[in-house]
Length: 259
Image 1 (cartoon, rainbow, N blue to C red):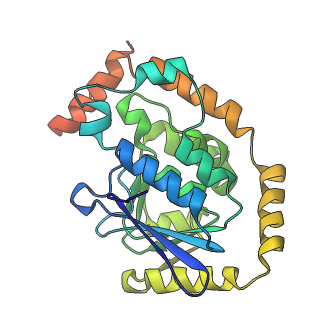
Image 2 (tube, one colour):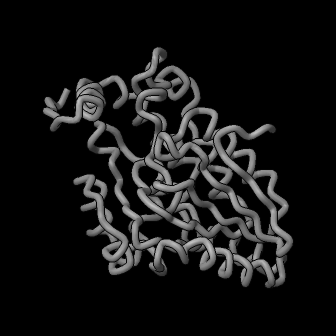
């Protein structure tokens, strides 16, 4: 697959780096970006994968203008026809390759979901985190439901999900959302050093450890994925969702009606 919206590089130390490469859109995700991320994760031969974004952002979530407000509108028909786990999420959640997220800036919406799907999170001091779905009249994807509470506790996870607040790197470290915060210029070296240490371990044992963690701690992702898809199919058709998108594009507070 020829990548246009990500960069993928395999290094000599069995570490690969996947970089979201739409900096002009703060690395917002299009349908193509999702496909490219899925392909890179499924095809990687690395022993550890670092995921990051081109400055100034890690990932600002879905490209609202293309996915939610584009000429075809949100993908309601596809979600209704075949409710399922997002393929990119399935690739990230099912891989036996350890993933280190190097979070260099805003990780909001599906960008925060992407960070949650990593096994380890290293944040720049410039990082910001937010589950913004509620502000668009939507529910989050499966990692926000299946991983966030395990990291920060149920009450804090509920607060982040229901309010859509954005928190900074220091707060993310305090509540356990990330494992370490480093100066911005030290982010990628720190993440690569961590990934290199993991890649130097016996890969068969690493794979079994990841499999065991999934069995012990993760929910049934397929079932949860079907729930999320069905929920989104309904929520995409609400007036609250349309108002959330309009308010975002018009840069004003939203006025929700419960319809």
